[in-house]
Length: 177
Length: 447
Image (cartoon, rainbow over all chains, first blue to last red; front, side, top):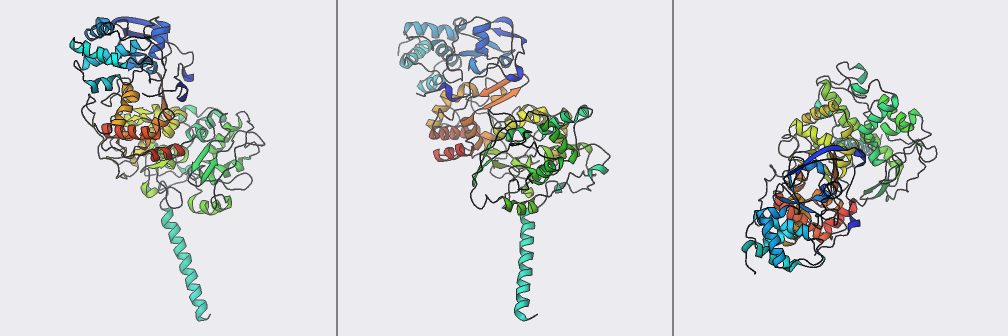
Protein backbone atom coordinates (compact mmCIF):
# COMPACT_ATOMS: atom_id res chain seq x y z
CA UNK A 1 0.00 0.00 0.00
CA UNK A 2 1.41 3.31 -1.00
CA UNK A 3 0.75 6.45 0.95
CA UNK A 4 0.22 9.40 -1.27
CA UNK A 5 0.37 12.74 0.43
CA UNK A 6 -1.34 15.35 -1.69
CA UNK A 7 0.73 18.24 -0.49
CA UNK A 8 3.93 16.51 -1.53
CA UNK A 9 3.50 17.03 -5.21
CA UNK A 10 2.77 19.89 -7.48
CA UNK A 11 -0.89 20.70 -7.15
CA UNK A 12 -2.75 19.87 -10.28
CA UNK A 13 -2.92 22.89 -12.50
CA UNK A 14 -6.49 23.91 -13.04
CA UNK A 15 -5.52 26.84 -15.16
CA UNK A 16 -2.16 27.68 -16.58
CA UNK A 17 -1.28 31.37 -16.08
CA UNK A 18 -0.34 31.47 -19.77
CA UNK A 19 -3.93 30.59 -20.67
CA UNK A 20 -5.66 32.46 -17.88
CA UNK A 21 -9.14 33.41 -18.90
CA UNK A 22 -8.69 31.83 -22.30
CA UNK A 23 -11.68 29.69 -23.13
CA UNK A 24 -12.11 27.60 -26.19
CA UNK A 25 -15.16 26.04 -27.75
CA UNK A 26 -14.49 22.34 -27.32
CA UNK A 27 -16.38 19.34 -28.60
CA UNK A 28 -15.95 15.90 -27.07
CA UNK A 29 -17.56 12.53 -27.62
CA UNK A 30 -18.64 11.41 -24.17
CA UNK A 31 -20.58 8.18 -23.74
CA UNK A 32 -21.37 8.18 -27.44
CA UNK A 33 -22.87 11.68 -27.37
CA UNK A 34 -21.33 14.82 -28.77
CA UNK A 35 -20.94 17.49 -26.10
CA UNK A 36 -19.92 21.08 -26.80
CA UNK A 37 -18.81 23.53 -24.13
CA UNK A 38 -16.37 26.36 -23.43
CA UNK A 39 -13.35 25.50 -21.30
CA UNK A 40 -9.71 26.50 -21.01
CA UNK A 41 -7.72 23.96 -23.08
CA UNK A 42 -5.68 22.89 -20.07
CA UNK A 43 -8.67 22.22 -17.82
CA UNK A 44 -8.47 18.61 -16.68
CA UNK A 45 -11.18 16.36 -18.13
CA UNK A 46 -12.43 15.64 -14.59
CA UNK A 47 -13.35 19.31 -14.07
CA UNK A 48 -15.17 19.36 -17.41
CA UNK A 49 -17.12 16.22 -16.50
CA UNK A 50 -18.10 17.28 -13.00
CA UNK A 51 -18.32 21.07 -13.06
CA UNK A 52 -19.29 21.86 -16.64
CA UNK A 53 -21.26 18.81 -17.74
CA UNK A 54 -22.63 17.93 -14.28
CA UNK A 55 -21.60 14.28 -14.58
CA UNK A 56 -20.60 13.72 -10.96
CA UNK A 57 -20.26 9.94 -11.03
CA UNK A 58 -16.53 10.32 -11.64
CA UNK A 59 -14.87 11.29 -8.36
CA UNK A 60 -12.06 13.65 -7.37
CA UNK A 61 -9.58 11.97 -5.05
CA UNK A 62 -5.96 13.04 -5.00
CA UNK A 63 -5.75 15.22 -8.10
CA UNK A 64 -2.35 13.82 -9.06
CA UNK A 65 -3.22 10.51 -10.74
CA UNK A 66 -2.23 8.50 -7.69
CA UNK A 67 -5.53 7.18 -6.28
CA UNK A 68 -7.61 6.15 -9.31
CA UNK A 69 -10.95 7.61 -8.14
CA UNK A 70 -11.25 9.71 -11.32
CA UNK A 71 -10.66 6.85 -13.77
CA UNK A 72 -12.52 7.05 -17.09
CA UNK A 73 -11.96 5.28 -20.42
CA UNK A 74 -10.38 7.08 -23.35
CA UNK A 75 -10.57 4.91 -26.46
CA UNK A 76 -11.29 1.99 -24.15
CA UNK A 77 -8.23 2.45 -21.96
CA UNK A 78 -8.40 3.38 -18.29
CA UNK A 79 -6.89 6.82 -17.69
CA UNK A 80 -6.94 9.27 -14.80
CA UNK A 81 -9.10 12.21 -15.80
CA UNK A 82 -7.68 14.53 -13.12
CA UNK A 83 -4.37 15.01 -14.98
CA UNK A 84 -5.70 14.79 -18.50
CA UNK A 85 -6.08 18.21 -20.15
CA UNK A 86 -9.31 18.37 -22.10
CA UNK A 87 -7.32 19.43 -25.19
CA UNK A 88 -5.70 15.96 -25.17
CA UNK A 89 -8.99 14.09 -25.62
CA UNK A 90 -10.50 15.94 -28.56
CA UNK A 91 -11.49 13.38 -31.23
CA UNK A 92 -11.19 10.49 -28.78
CA UNK A 93 -14.06 8.50 -27.30
CA UNK A 94 -14.55 9.09 -23.57
CA UNK A 95 -16.62 6.66 -21.47
CA UNK A 96 -17.54 7.41 -17.87
CA UNK A 97 -19.12 5.46 -15.02
CA UNK A 98 -22.55 6.75 -16.09
CA UNK A 99 -22.35 4.74 -19.30
CA UNK A 100 -19.92 1.88 -18.68
CA UNK A 101 -22.84 -0.46 -17.85
CA UNK A 102 -23.78 -0.46 -21.51
CA UNK A 103 -20.45 -1.99 -22.54
CA UNK A 104 -20.22 -5.79 -22.26
CA UNK A 105 -17.37 -5.84 -19.76
CA UNK A 106 -18.82 -2.93 -17.79
CA UNK A 107 -22.18 -4.71 -17.43
CA UNK A 108 -20.47 -7.87 -16.18
CA UNK A 109 -18.36 -5.91 -13.70
CA UNK A 110 -21.31 -3.98 -12.29
CA UNK A 111 -23.35 -7.17 -11.81
CA UNK A 112 -20.44 -8.93 -10.13
CA UNK A 113 -19.89 -5.87 -7.89
CA UNK A 114 -23.48 -6.19 -6.66
CA UNK A 115 -23.34 -9.97 -6.32
CA UNK A 116 -20.12 -9.88 -4.34
CA UNK A 117 -21.24 -6.82 -2.35
CA UNK A 118 -17.90 -5.15 -2.95
CA UNK A 119 -18.77 -1.63 -1.94
CA UNK A 120 -18.31 -0.20 1.54
CA UNK A 121 -18.23 3.63 1.55
CA UNK A 122 -18.18 3.69 -2.24
CA UNK A 123 -16.10 6.77 -2.93
CA UNK A 124 -13.39 4.98 -4.91
CA UNK A 125 -15.73 2.51 -6.57
CA UNK A 126 -16.48 4.38 -9.81
CA UNK A 127 -12.76 4.33 -10.46
CA UNK A 128 -12.42 0.68 -9.39
CA UNK A 129 -15.23 -0.34 -11.74
CA UNK A 130 -13.78 1.63 -14.66
CA UNK A 131 -10.34 0.04 -14.17
CA UNK A 132 -11.85 -3.44 -13.81
CA UNK A 133 -13.99 -3.00 -16.93
CA UNK A 134 -10.97 -1.89 -18.99
CA UNK A 135 -9.01 -4.85 -17.65
CA UNK A 136 -11.71 -7.37 -18.65
CA UNK A 137 -12.13 -5.81 -22.08
CA UNK A 138 -8.42 -6.32 -22.78
CA UNK A 139 -7.85 -9.50 -20.72
CA UNK A 140 -11.12 -11.48 -20.48
CA UNK A 141 -9.70 -14.03 -18.05
CA UNK A 142 -7.24 -12.24 -15.80
CA UNK A 143 -5.11 -14.00 -13.20
CA UNK A 144 -3.95 -12.45 -9.93
CA UNK A 145 -0.92 -10.84 -11.53
CA UNK A 146 -3.07 -9.24 -14.23
CA UNK A 147 -5.42 -7.90 -11.57
CA UNK A 148 -2.46 -6.51 -9.58
CA UNK A 149 -1.01 -4.80 -12.67
CA UNK A 150 -4.32 -3.23 -13.69
CA UNK A 151 -5.74 -2.35 -10.28
CA UNK A 152 -2.64 -1.30 -8.29
CA UNK A 153 -3.28 2.36 -9.05
CA UNK A 154 -6.80 2.31 -7.58
CA UNK A 155 -6.73 2.86 -3.86
CA UNK A 156 -9.55 1.97 -1.45
CA UNK A 157 -9.42 3.33 2.08
CA UNK A 158 -12.07 0.86 3.24
CA UNK A 159 -9.82 -2.00 2.14
CA UNK A 160 -12.26 -3.75 -0.17
CA UNK A 161 -9.37 -5.17 -2.18
CA UNK A 162 -10.20 -8.81 -1.43
CA UNK A 163 -13.79 -8.41 -2.60
CA UNK A 164 -12.64 -6.41 -5.66
CA UNK A 165 -10.41 -9.31 -6.68
CA UNK A 166 -13.25 -11.81 -6.13
CA UNK A 167 -15.70 -9.70 -8.10
CA UNK A 168 -13.31 -9.34 -11.05
CA UNK A 169 -12.95 -13.13 -11.16
CA UNK A 170 -16.69 -13.53 -10.82
CA UNK A 171 -17.27 -11.12 -13.69
CA UNK A 172 -14.76 -12.99 -15.84
CA UNK A 173 -15.95 -16.53 -15.16
CA UNK A 174 -19.49 -16.13 -13.90
CA UNK A 175 -18.46 -18.27 -10.90
CA UNK A 176 -17.70 -17.35 -7.31
CA UNK A 177 -14.03 -18.20 -6.67
CA UNK B 1 77.04 32.73 -16.89
CA UNK B 2 78.36 29.82 -14.92
CA UNK B 3 77.25 26.23 -15.32
CA UNK B 4 74.74 26.25 -12.43
CA UNK B 5 73.07 29.38 -13.72
CA UNK B 6 72.81 27.88 -17.19
CA UNK B 7 71.19 24.73 -15.82
CA UNK B 8 68.76 26.80 -13.74
CA UNK B 9 67.88 29.00 -16.72
CA UNK B 10 67.24 25.94 -18.89
CA UNK B 11 65.06 24.40 -16.17
CA UNK B 12 63.02 27.58 -15.91
CA UNK B 13 62.69 27.73 -19.71
CA UNK B 14 61.62 24.07 -19.84
CA UNK B 15 59.18 24.70 -17.01
CA UNK B 16 57.60 27.66 -18.79
CA UNK B 17 57.30 25.73 -22.04
CA UNK B 18 55.74 22.79 -20.16
CA UNK B 19 53.19 25.01 -18.37
CA UNK B 20 52.29 26.87 -21.57
CA UNK B 21 51.88 23.64 -23.55
CA UNK B 22 49.87 22.07 -20.72
CA UNK B 23 47.54 25.10 -20.69
CA UNK B 24 47.30 24.95 -24.46
CA UNK B 25 46.49 21.23 -24.40
CA UNK B 26 43.95 21.52 -21.60
CA UNK B 27 42.29 24.54 -23.15
CA UNK B 28 41.85 22.90 -26.56
CA UNK B 29 39.91 24.45 -29.41
CA UNK B 30 37.39 27.27 -29.12
CA UNK B 31 33.66 26.63 -29.55
CA UNK B 32 33.62 27.66 -33.22
CA UNK B 33 37.02 26.37 -34.32
CA UNK B 34 35.44 23.25 -35.85
CA UNK B 35 33.95 25.36 -38.66
CA UNK B 36 37.39 26.20 -40.00
CA UNK B 37 36.35 28.87 -42.53
CA UNK B 38 37.55 32.45 -42.91
CA UNK B 39 36.33 34.70 -40.10
CA UNK B 40 35.59 38.38 -40.51
CA UNK B 41 34.67 41.01 -37.95
CA UNK B 42 30.93 41.32 -37.38
CA UNK B 43 30.96 44.87 -38.76
CA UNK B 44 32.54 43.69 -42.02
CA UNK B 45 30.03 40.90 -42.65
CA UNK B 46 27.47 41.88 -45.27
CA UNK B 47 25.74 38.60 -46.23
CA UNK B 48 23.34 38.61 -43.28
CA UNK B 49 22.81 39.80 -39.72
CA UNK B 50 24.07 37.19 -37.26
CA UNK B 51 23.72 39.42 -34.19
CA UNK B 52 20.80 41.46 -32.89
CA UNK B 53 17.10 40.67 -33.02
CA UNK B 54 15.03 38.98 -35.76
CA UNK B 55 13.74 41.15 -38.63
CA UNK B 56 10.29 41.54 -37.07
CA UNK B 57 11.79 43.33 -34.04
CA UNK B 58 14.34 45.53 -35.78
CA UNK B 59 12.16 48.60 -35.48
CA UNK B 60 11.26 47.86 -31.87
CA UNK B 61 12.54 49.98 -28.97
CA UNK B 62 15.90 49.28 -27.37
CA UNK B 63 14.15 47.84 -24.31
CA UNK B 64 12.04 45.46 -26.42
CA UNK B 65 15.08 44.32 -28.35
CA UNK B 66 16.90 43.84 -25.07
CA UNK B 67 14.03 41.75 -23.76
CA UNK B 68 14.24 39.38 -26.74
CA UNK B 69 17.99 39.07 -26.30
CA UNK B 70 17.75 38.59 -22.52
CA UNK B 71 15.30 35.74 -23.12
CA UNK B 72 17.54 34.28 -25.82
CA UNK B 73 20.43 34.39 -23.34
CA UNK B 74 18.10 32.91 -20.69
CA UNK B 75 19.31 35.31 -17.97
CA UNK B 76 16.19 34.92 -15.86
CA UNK B 77 16.31 31.22 -14.98
CA UNK B 78 19.61 31.49 -13.13
CA UNK B 79 19.04 34.98 -11.74
CA UNK B 80 15.67 34.14 -10.16
CA UNK B 81 15.03 32.03 -7.11
CA UNK B 82 11.79 30.05 -7.57
CA UNK B 83 8.94 31.92 -5.90
CA UNK B 84 10.92 35.16 -5.60
CA UNK B 85 10.99 38.26 -7.82
CA UNK B 86 12.31 37.91 -11.36
CA UNK B 87 16.01 38.73 -11.82
CA UNK B 88 16.51 39.35 -8.08
CA UNK B 89 19.03 36.47 -7.77
CA UNK B 90 19.58 34.07 -4.90
CA UNK B 91 19.33 30.79 -6.81
CA UNK B 92 21.74 28.23 -5.36
CA UNK B 93 24.21 26.36 -7.55
CA UNK B 94 25.32 23.25 -5.72
CA UNK B 95 28.87 22.40 -6.76
CA UNK B 96 31.16 19.66 -5.50
CA UNK B 97 33.17 22.31 -3.65
CA UNK B 98 30.40 24.42 -2.13
CA UNK B 99 27.38 26.50 -3.05
CA UNK B 100 27.27 29.59 -5.24
CA UNK B 101 24.34 32.00 -5.32
CA UNK B 102 23.26 33.99 -8.34
CA UNK B 103 23.19 37.76 -7.99
CA UNK B 104 20.47 40.38 -8.14
CA UNK B 105 20.54 41.94 -11.62
CA UNK B 106 17.59 44.28 -11.12
CA UNK B 107 18.48 48.01 -11.22
CA UNK B 108 18.51 48.36 -7.41
CA UNK B 109 21.41 50.66 -6.57
CA UNK B 110 22.46 48.96 -3.32
CA UNK B 111 21.87 45.27 -3.93
CA UNK B 112 21.50 45.03 -7.72
CA UNK B 113 23.30 46.51 -10.70
CA UNK B 114 21.77 50.00 -10.54
CA UNK B 115 25.20 51.63 -10.39
CA UNK B 116 26.63 49.79 -13.38
CA UNK B 117 27.83 51.97 -16.25
CA UNK B 118 27.67 50.57 -19.77
CA UNK B 119 31.34 49.66 -19.51
CA UNK B 120 30.77 47.96 -16.12
CA UNK B 121 28.01 45.85 -17.64
CA UNK B 122 30.12 44.92 -20.69
CA UNK B 123 32.96 43.94 -18.35
CA UNK B 124 30.68 41.68 -16.32
CA UNK B 125 28.95 39.97 -19.25
CA UNK B 126 31.88 39.63 -21.65
CA UNK B 127 34.83 39.43 -19.26
CA UNK B 128 33.51 38.14 -15.93
CA UNK B 129 34.64 41.28 -14.12
CA UNK B 130 32.43 42.82 -11.45
CA UNK B 131 31.73 46.53 -10.94
CA UNK B 132 34.09 46.54 -7.92
CA UNK B 133 36.83 44.81 -9.89
CA UNK B 134 36.28 41.38 -8.31
CA UNK B 135 36.06 38.37 -10.60
CA UNK B 136 32.90 36.40 -11.35
CA UNK B 137 32.85 32.65 -11.13
CA UNK B 138 32.19 30.95 -14.46
CA UNK B 139 28.79 29.67 -13.26
CA UNK B 140 27.98 32.96 -14.99
CA UNK B 141 28.63 31.81 -18.57
CA UNK B 142 30.65 34.87 -19.58
CA UNK B 143 32.95 32.66 -21.66
CA UNK B 144 29.87 32.24 -23.92
CA UNK B 145 28.43 35.74 -23.54
CA UNK B 146 31.83 37.14 -24.48
CA UNK B 147 30.82 36.41 -28.09
CA UNK B 148 27.85 38.81 -27.83
CA UNK B 149 28.17 42.11 -29.65
CA UNK B 150 28.52 45.23 -27.46
CA UNK B 151 25.29 46.50 -28.94
CA UNK B 152 23.37 43.38 -27.87
CA UNK B 153 24.87 43.35 -24.37
CA UNK B 154 23.83 46.97 -23.91
CA UNK B 155 20.32 46.24 -25.21
CA UNK B 156 20.04 43.59 -22.48
CA UNK B 157 21.24 46.20 -19.98
CA UNK B 158 18.57 48.63 -21.16
CA UNK B 159 15.94 45.91 -20.68
CA UNK B 160 17.16 45.01 -17.18
CA UNK B 161 17.23 48.70 -16.23
CA UNK B 162 13.61 49.03 -17.39
CA UNK B 163 12.52 46.47 -14.74
CA UNK B 164 11.48 47.36 -11.19
CA UNK B 165 14.41 47.58 -8.78
CA UNK B 166 14.22 44.82 -6.18
CA UNK B 167 16.09 45.04 -2.92
CA UNK B 168 17.51 41.57 -2.35
CA UNK B 169 20.91 40.36 -1.27
CA UNK B 170 21.91 36.81 -2.15
CA UNK B 171 23.36 34.63 0.61
CA UNK B 172 27.15 34.43 0.80
CA UNK B 173 28.79 31.71 -1.25
CA UNK B 174 30.02 28.73 0.74
CA UNK B 175 32.91 27.62 -1.45
CA UNK B 176 35.81 25.80 0.17
CA UNK B 177 39.49 26.69 -0.21
CA UNK B 178 40.99 27.21 -2.79
CA UNK B 179 37.77 27.83 -4.72
CA UNK B 180 36.79 30.69 -2.40
CA UNK B 181 39.75 32.75 -3.68
CA UNK B 182 38.01 34.95 -6.22
CA UNK B 183 41.24 36.62 -7.33
CA UNK B 184 42.45 33.29 -8.67
CA UNK B 185 39.76 33.55 -11.35
CA UNK B 186 42.02 36.16 -13.00
CA UNK B 187 44.22 33.28 -14.13
CA UNK B 188 41.25 31.08 -15.03
CA UNK B 189 39.81 33.85 -17.18
CA UNK B 190 43.15 34.58 -18.82
CA UNK B 191 43.35 30.95 -19.93
CA UNK B 192 39.73 30.08 -20.62
CA UNK B 193 37.93 33.28 -21.58
CA UNK B 194 38.79 34.21 -25.17
CA UNK B 195 37.38 37.74 -24.53
CA UNK B 196 36.50 38.08 -28.17
CA UNK B 197 33.31 38.96 -30.05
CA UNK B 198 31.52 36.69 -32.50
CA UNK B 199 33.25 36.69 -35.88
CA UNK B 200 31.07 35.44 -38.77
CA UNK B 201 32.42 32.68 -40.99
CA UNK B 202 32.28 33.69 -44.67
CA UNK B 203 32.38 30.07 -45.86
CA UNK B 204 29.01 29.40 -44.16
CA UNK B 205 25.49 30.58 -44.90
CA UNK B 206 23.97 33.63 -43.18
CA UNK B 207 21.55 31.20 -41.52
CA UNK B 208 24.41 29.19 -40.06
CA UNK B 209 26.08 32.36 -38.77
CA UNK B 210 22.87 33.50 -37.10
CA UNK B 211 22.46 30.01 -35.59
CA UNK B 212 26.06 30.02 -34.37
CA UNK B 213 25.56 33.41 -32.72
CA UNK B 214 22.30 32.33 -31.07
CA UNK B 215 23.64 28.97 -29.87
CA UNK B 216 27.09 30.08 -28.75
CA UNK B 217 26.83 33.72 -27.65
CA UNK B 218 23.25 33.76 -26.35
CA UNK B 219 21.71 30.34 -25.62
CA UNK B 220 25.07 28.99 -24.34
CA UNK B 221 24.11 25.38 -25.22
CA UNK B 222 27.65 24.16 -24.59
CA UNK B 223 27.55 25.14 -20.91
CA UNK B 224 25.42 22.03 -20.27
CA UNK B 225 25.90 19.90 -23.39
CA UNK B 226 29.72 20.07 -23.72
CA UNK B 227 31.83 18.07 -21.25
CA UNK B 228 34.32 20.00 -19.12
CA UNK B 229 38.11 19.70 -19.04
CA UNK B 230 40.54 19.53 -16.11
CA UNK B 231 40.12 23.26 -15.54
CA UNK B 232 36.27 23.02 -15.45
CA UNK B 233 36.10 24.85 -18.77
CA UNK B 234 34.34 23.47 -21.85
CA UNK B 235 36.25 20.75 -23.70
CA UNK B 236 35.38 21.55 -27.31
CA UNK B 237 37.20 18.49 -28.57
CA UNK B 238 33.97 16.78 -27.50
CA UNK B 239 31.75 19.71 -28.40
CA UNK B 240 28.06 19.05 -27.65
CA UNK B 241 28.89 15.44 -26.77
CA UNK B 242 26.75 15.59 -23.64
CA UNK B 243 27.51 15.98 -19.92
CA UNK B 244 25.95 15.82 -16.47
CA UNK B 245 25.00 19.28 -15.21
CA UNK B 246 23.24 20.05 -11.93
CA UNK B 247 22.35 16.38 -11.47
CA UNK B 248 20.65 16.03 -14.88
CA UNK B 249 22.10 14.51 -18.02
CA UNK B 250 22.30 16.95 -20.91
CA UNK B 251 22.36 14.51 -23.83
CA UNK B 252 24.55 14.49 -26.89
CA UNK B 253 23.46 17.22 -29.34
CA UNK B 254 26.28 16.76 -31.84
CA UNK B 255 25.41 15.49 -35.32
CA UNK B 256 26.25 11.87 -34.37
CA UNK B 257 23.68 9.64 -36.09
CA UNK B 258 23.31 7.06 -33.35
CA UNK B 259 23.65 8.97 -30.09
CA UNK B 260 23.35 12.62 -31.14
CA UNK B 261 20.85 14.55 -33.21
CA UNK B 262 21.96 13.13 -36.58
CA UNK B 263 18.81 11.08 -37.06
CA UNK B 264 16.35 13.74 -35.84
CA UNK B 265 14.38 15.44 -38.60
CA UNK B 266 14.31 19.24 -38.87
CA UNK B 267 10.67 19.11 -37.79
CA UNK B 268 11.66 17.12 -34.66
CA UNK B 269 14.31 19.65 -33.70
CA UNK B 270 12.05 22.63 -34.34
CA UNK B 271 9.28 21.04 -32.30
CA UNK B 272 11.60 20.08 -29.42
CA UNK B 273 13.13 23.54 -29.18
CA UNK B 274 9.94 25.55 -29.54
CA UNK B 275 7.49 23.29 -27.64
CA UNK B 276 9.78 21.10 -25.55
CA UNK B 277 8.54 17.94 -27.19
CA UNK B 278 9.17 15.98 -30.36
CA UNK B 279 7.08 12.91 -31.22
CA UNK B 280 9.01 9.76 -30.35
CA UNK B 281 11.85 11.70 -28.73
CA UNK B 282 10.24 12.64 -25.45
CA UNK B 283 9.69 15.90 -23.64
CA UNK B 284 12.13 18.40 -22.19
CA UNK B 285 12.31 18.30 -18.39
CA UNK B 286 14.62 19.67 -15.71
CA UNK B 287 17.04 22.37 -16.90
CA UNK B 288 16.13 21.87 -20.59
CA UNK B 289 12.46 22.22 -19.71
CA UNK B 290 13.31 25.59 -18.14
CA UNK B 291 15.36 26.58 -21.18
CA UNK B 292 12.37 25.83 -23.43
CA UNK B 293 9.84 27.54 -21.18
CA UNK B 294 11.78 30.76 -20.64
CA UNK B 295 14.00 30.96 -23.70
CA UNK B 296 13.53 28.78 -26.81
CA UNK B 297 9.72 28.98 -26.81
CA UNK B 298 10.11 32.77 -27.12
CA UNK B 299 12.41 32.59 -30.16
CA UNK B 300 11.19 33.78 -33.55
CA UNK B 301 10.59 30.77 -35.87
CA UNK B 302 13.41 31.83 -38.20
CA UNK B 303 15.82 31.90 -35.25
CA UNK B 304 14.85 28.34 -34.27
CA UNK B 305 15.53 27.28 -37.87
CA UNK B 306 18.94 28.98 -37.77
CA UNK B 307 19.86 27.11 -34.59
CA UNK B 308 18.85 23.85 -36.28
CA UNK B 309 21.03 24.70 -39.31
CA UNK B 310 23.94 25.36 -36.96
CA UNK B 311 23.44 22.21 -34.83
CA UNK B 312 23.52 20.10 -38.00
CA UNK B 313 27.07 21.29 -38.70
CA UNK B 314 28.59 20.34 -35.34
CA UNK B 315 30.90 17.34 -35.94
CA UNK B 316 29.64 13.98 -34.63
CA UNK B 317 30.87 12.93 -31.20
CA UNK B 318 29.77 9.52 -30.00
CA UNK B 319 28.39 8.77 -26.53
CA UNK B 320 29.74 5.25 -26.07
CA UNK B 321 27.52 4.44 -23.09
CA UNK B 322 24.33 4.97 -25.08
CA UNK B 323 22.85 2.29 -27.36
CA UNK B 324 23.11 2.67 -31.14
CA UNK B 325 19.33 2.55 -31.42
CA UNK B 326 16.67 3.19 -28.82
CA UNK B 327 14.48 0.28 -27.72
CA UNK B 328 11.22 -0.46 -29.57
CA UNK B 329 7.77 -0.35 -27.98
CA UNK B 330 7.47 -2.77 -25.04
CA UNK B 331 4.78 -5.48 -25.03
CA UNK B 332 1.25 -4.35 -24.18
CA UNK B 333 0.91 -6.89 -21.37
CA UNK B 334 2.72 -6.45 -18.09
CA UNK B 335 3.55 -10.18 -18.24
CA UNK B 336 5.64 -9.98 -21.39
CA UNK B 337 8.94 -8.23 -21.74
CA UNK B 338 11.08 -7.53 -18.72
CA UNK B 339 9.69 -9.08 -15.57
CA UNK B 340 12.67 -8.62 -13.26
CA UNK B 341 12.63 -6.23 -10.31
CA UNK B 342 9.30 -7.09 -8.73
CA UNK B 343 9.51 -4.06 -6.46
CA UNK B 344 10.05 -1.68 -9.35
CA UNK B 345 7.14 -3.27 -11.18
CA UNK B 346 4.89 -2.80 -8.18
CA UNK B 347 5.71 0.90 -7.96
CA UNK B 348 5.26 1.25 -11.71
CA UNK B 349 1.85 -0.47 -11.59
CA UNK B 350 0.54 1.81 -8.88
CA UNK B 351 2.12 5.14 -9.75
CA UNK B 352 3.13 5.16 -13.42
CA UNK B 353 1.19 2.70 -15.58
CA UNK B 354 -2.06 4.65 -15.75
CA UNK B 355 -0.38 7.48 -17.67
CA UNK B 356 2.63 5.83 -19.33
CA UNK B 357 1.06 2.45 -20.18
CA UNK B 358 2.74 -0.96 -20.00
CA UNK B 359 4.00 -0.57 -23.57
CA UNK B 360 5.65 2.79 -22.93
CA UNK B 361 3.28 4.46 -25.40
CA UNK B 362 1.11 6.71 -23.29
CA UNK B 363 -2.67 6.28 -23.50
CA UNK B 364 -2.91 9.89 -22.30
CA UNK B 365 -0.68 11.99 -24.54
CA UNK B 366 2.28 11.49 -26.91
CA UNK B 367 4.11 13.88 -24.57
CA UNK B 368 4.06 11.17 -21.89
CA UNK B 369 5.34 8.40 -24.17
CA UNK B 370 8.50 6.81 -22.81
CA UNK B 371 9.40 4.74 -25.87
CA UNK B 372 12.23 6.27 -27.90
CA UNK B 373 13.39 8.77 -25.28
CA UNK B 374 17.04 8.98 -24.29
CA UNK B 375 16.06 9.16 -20.63
CA UNK B 376 14.83 5.53 -20.57
CA UNK B 377 17.60 4.40 -22.93
CA UNK B 378 20.34 5.80 -20.69
CA UNK B 379 21.71 2.86 -18.67
CA UNK B 380 22.56 5.32 -15.88
CA UNK B 381 18.85 6.33 -15.56
CA UNK B 382 19.90 9.78 -14.34
CA UNK B 383 17.02 11.70 -15.85
CA UNK B 384 14.43 9.00 -15.15
CA UNK B 385 15.27 9.23 -11.45
CA UNK B 386 15.29 13.04 -11.57
CA UNK B 387 11.90 13.28 -13.26
CA UNK B 388 10.43 10.84 -10.75
CA UNK B 389 11.88 12.95 -7.91
CA UNK B 390 10.94 16.40 -9.18
CA UNK B 391 8.15 15.81 -11.70
CA UNK B 392 7.88 17.76 -14.89
CA UNK B 393 5.52 20.12 -16.61
CA UNK B 394 5.27 21.02 -20.27
CA UNK B 395 3.49 24.09 -21.55
CA UNK B 396 2.03 23.87 -25.02
CA UNK B 397 -0.22 26.16 -27.01
CA UNK B 398 -3.08 23.86 -25.89
CA UNK B 399 -2.25 24.08 -22.22
CA UNK B 400 0.03 22.39 -19.76
CA UNK B 401 0.56 18.70 -19.09
CA UNK B 402 2.28 17.78 -15.88
CA UNK B 403 3.65 14.84 -14.00
CA UNK B 404 3.63 15.14 -10.22
CA UNK B 405 6.85 15.04 -8.19
CA UNK B 406 7.21 11.71 -6.39
CA UNK B 407 10.35 12.65 -4.48
CA UNK B 408 8.57 12.94 -1.15
CA UNK B 409 6.12 10.07 -1.70
CA UNK B 410 8.68 7.33 -2.34
CA UNK B 411 11.89 6.29 -0.62
CA UNK B 412 15.26 6.36 -2.39
CA UNK B 413 15.05 2.59 -2.57
CA UNK B 414 11.66 2.65 -4.30
CA UNK B 415 12.78 5.35 -6.74
CA UNK B 416 15.89 3.32 -7.60
CA UNK B 417 13.71 0.21 -8.11
CA UNK B 418 11.23 1.93 -10.40
CA UNK B 419 14.02 3.63 -12.41
CA UNK B 420 15.72 0.25 -12.85
CA UNK B 421 12.43 -1.32 -13.94
CA UNK B 422 11.58 1.49 -16.35
CA UNK B 423 14.98 1.51 -18.05
CA UNK B 424 14.92 -2.30 -18.34
CA UNK B 425 11.36 -2.42 -19.72
CA UNK B 426 11.39 0.58 -22.04
CA UNK B 427 15.11 1.06 -22.72
CA UNK B 428 17.87 -1.13 -24.10
CA UNK B 429 19.68 -1.85 -20.85
CA UNK B 430 18.34 -1.67 -17.33
CA UNK B 431 20.05 0.64 -14.87
CA UNK B 432 21.51 -0.53 -11.58
CA UNK B 433 20.69 2.42 -9.37
CA UNK B 434 20.92 2.02 -5.62
CA UNK B 435 19.24 4.04 -2.88
CA UNK B 436 22.58 5.81 -2.38
CA UNK B 437 22.70 6.91 -6.03
CA UNK B 438 19.20 8.35 -5.71
CA UNK B 439 20.15 10.18 -2.50
CA UNK B 440 23.10 11.73 -4.35
CA UNK B 441 20.90 12.80 -7.25
CA UNK B 442 18.51 14.46 -4.80
CA UNK B 443 21.44 16.35 -3.24
CA UNK B 444 22.50 17.82 -6.56
CA UNK B 445 19.10 19.30 -7.27
CA UNK B 446 18.05 20.24 -3.77
CA UNK B 447 16.82 23.54 -5.16
